[in-house]
Length: 599
Image 1 (cartoon, helix red, strand yellow):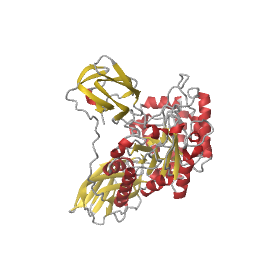
Image 2: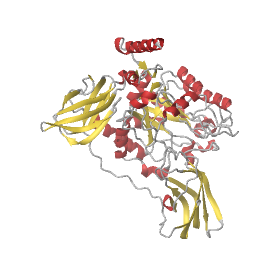
Image 3: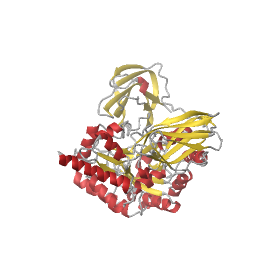
Image 4: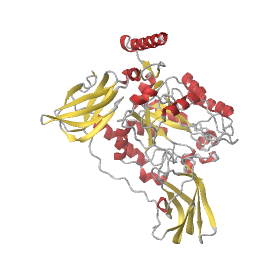
């Protein structure tokens, strides 16, 4: 027993020496001694810090996703891998237009979907014929990845690649060793032939292959390829440098810890630990004291918030009037960058190979708004770094101008430590509370009503070890008055509709109508339909199936689905059948969720 106590004490002494005497920190990962106390775990969690590449990534704040590929030309969100490469033929492709439009809006990196789930490769890979070299674009000699990388280099923008592990075209998918070898070859091509790559983005999409077996990805091998060929690149989402925030709505957590026991499910040991702690990327709590007390290992694993500027991730012309408003983008900025995350905003090019004019105009508005808001700090001494223990305060003098936003930053190179804080303003010689919050991390933004305080006071109420505040700012964000256009989900009135069956949903329309498409609207907190079949009838007995398909990505992006047919048909009855749900069930559907399109 004495030996155990001595060993633990020695480890703690070593840890304490690292973090106090030599001013050293634990970079990216910290595994606790077995018999350490919860209080000691919290203490040492304060000294976990990002790697240099993670810190550089966090400073980008605004990064852009470019979803472009076969789906752009088929109108789908997830292709099935059976598409004819001849369909890919952008008429006016211009990667420089992408880069300059994004750069003008303040974005610092572009990530291109080099291969999506359909398996179509945007570079002339040697691994498959399902690529740009089999398309008519540039007479089969084109390379989207090359042109995008050249444009990024020319204009000084960082560059990243998305490579889908799920490949619905590859014959070897499901034969795990064979497919993993092919996937590694694709990675090597992307990471050796195009210069420096700053982010490699993997989602966790996974399925069965043609052989009926579920593909098992060799993540350790993939990581080795990236680390050896692009050591400065962060590995995102299924990578262990950057994590998914847990939704595709642009929403960060009110309490967002970069120090967390969560790591991606890349092997059985990590899966078991995540299950034991009951954590996943969607969990509300990823870094509390209680969670740390149960943890064996902590990681620096910061949040990336991905969201599309349109309802879908790929371009669809019917969504030209559904581009997010300036107010929506500003709200997303506050809830991502302003909540200790990096914003990854998707802007999908159209069939021309250009960012659409509506999107470009909105990006310009957004960039100007953010610059105009945050260019001038209304505090005269906000950049004065300071350390704080529980209850410590610091006052900042203002310019006397009206403000409604406070920015706080920790020096995360010394860890993330603040747990609770408040901000007060000296107004008419009285200190009034303006805002309060929990975590700060790299950056925290809080909004409140317009006021013109003579001073600002920040109080750190609770912290893990001494907090290291690096920057405080006060700003005025101007109001945005606009409204997004409502989406029409049915061209036909439902007054005469009557459900004659609930599962499948059969509806007597009460009259014969022209049907050129339908809509399906998911319901919050209910399982959504994934695979469906839609049929029509004139008498309710004899049915014609018009469409059988899937609502791609509906689980992560539960937006109204709009399906259009090539030709209109007349019908007095419709039938909507759930084949499978997004969670594997067979959810029922109501009349309220279905609409008919005839335009």
